[in-house]
Amino acid sequence: MMQSTISPSEKVNTELSDLGHAPTHKESSEAHEDTPTTIFTNTTAGIGDDGNVLPVTHTYSKALRREDGKIELCEDDCYKELGFCFPEWKKWSILTVIFIVQTSMNFNASIFANAISPMAEEFNVPVETARHGQMVFLIAYAFGCELWAPWSEELGRWSILQLSLFLVNVWQIPCALAQNPSTMLAGRFLGGLSSAGGSVTLGMVADMWEPNDQQFAVSYVVLSSVGGSVVAPIVGGFIQQYLHWRWVFWIQLIFGVFAQLLHYFACSETRSSVLLDRIAKGRRKAANGRGDDANVYGPNEIKGSLRHRLSFKEIVEIWTRPFIMFVKEPIVLCLSLLSGFSDALIFTFLESYKPVFSQWNFGTIALGLAFIPLPVGYVIAYFSFMPFFRRDRRARQLKGADAVPPERRLYWLLYTAPLLTLGLLGFAWTSVGPPRVHWIAPLVFSALVGIANYAIYMATVDYMVAAYGPYASSATGGNGMARDFLAGIAALYASPFYTNLPAPYTLEYPTTILACLAFVLTLPIYVFYWKGAWFRERSKFALNIAASRMENEGRRTSNVSLARDVRKSQKESSSRQGSRRSSPARQRTPAGSRRPSLV
Image (cartoon, rainbow, N blue to C red):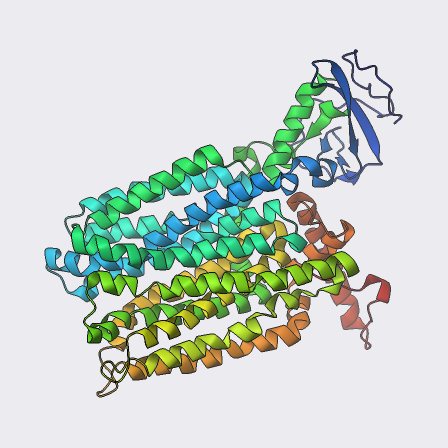
């Protein structure tokens, strides 16, 4: 197609000149096989700043021409209109709102501990029974992350987060008004299941930053995730001291409503597939029925309405996608379990605060303030990653993306992960109490635990967001599920763990056991760092994304094109496996087609 020359004063669009036929209005009941188009341009009218009509030329170099005449819009054809090209101030404004949203969700998970004792007294039930509300919320939260994540990839981040926040806020009300433990458990379960969590918020990072530039943003969101869990007991001490226990839930509701309103007014959609639909609608409207823009459709528009494009089978596939990735993708499975067991150890460790610091006569407020070293450790860890981010970015700019292998994102973790063992061990043997030890000693070691916890979560999530791009929500959902589920299980045994071991080291032995487990837990980090390529070669989903990214010169590919590439790759893989079975010698991959880096 030849690009037309159009006068700025004329409201005209380029006519279809070399399409073999006009698009039919009748939709086919089955999807047609997509065929790549040649590069073509389309000129439509636009309005300039001075009010005059100006020509706007859209080039479709990667679009797909369907048999029915529709052109499926791809990310490369409108890249500058997507979240990746938002102004930096807009990206960080959205991310700051998400920081508050994520903090509020994790705040809900932790502050319940401050209501346990007074609630148990009012309901006349054992403290262990009242503690079930914390366990139920965390386990439901684990599955909530997995259930919400894929829907945010299909329907958009903004609407899913709004629905999640609304439901979480609604379920605070029956908890605040509960007259028996059963009502409380039901409200906590539904509240946890309604929490979208970090899987969706981390997916928004993948929407706005390319893998080579996302580390600063990922670290910021991770800080909100771990920070919300420790801000809760600090605030909760004052609530428990001065207010009725029901205010624990009213304050959660106030915080949640504030976060939802802030998100409603200050956040825009970031999911590329949703933005592609909106861009396509805008171009068709501007084309006024003329030119190629009149036939441009977004990926979800091509599929049809939500009711038509999602059969029961597809709904099941969407919901099970995170679980399948968790089981079948070695990267997701190994790093999620690493992060999850780390979080369970720390959750168990935090149960020691009350018996340990009561030796120094810490009251309710002082006990809450004793958690301050943990966020201090998180902030120290957050800033400690910055030099490595800058170094990697310079290396990629000077030598290309392949100069920094994916395992490089785990480098700083090699040195910070041992702080988990060191912090727990130091805390254990400074818990002997006065007069032998000052109370500041265990607090210093707890800060080391905070540094290690942040580093483990940050490095594992950063690796997965980079590897899985547009499906980062499903991948990191496994990480969130492991952390919350194992922490929820820990809620059952954590308290007895610090009361039932024999004297005289009832407090020292449990934390020492945790330190030994932490040592074993951190060993796979070094295996993954040195043998990461082996794991990546067995993570087919990540390899497909990496291959598509190489074709796009380092940029991630759209989820629509990716799905097609995955299907194609699976067919090729099946045929290759069949040929390997019939061939006695293993075929070598040509050097020119070597598997690309995930970075």
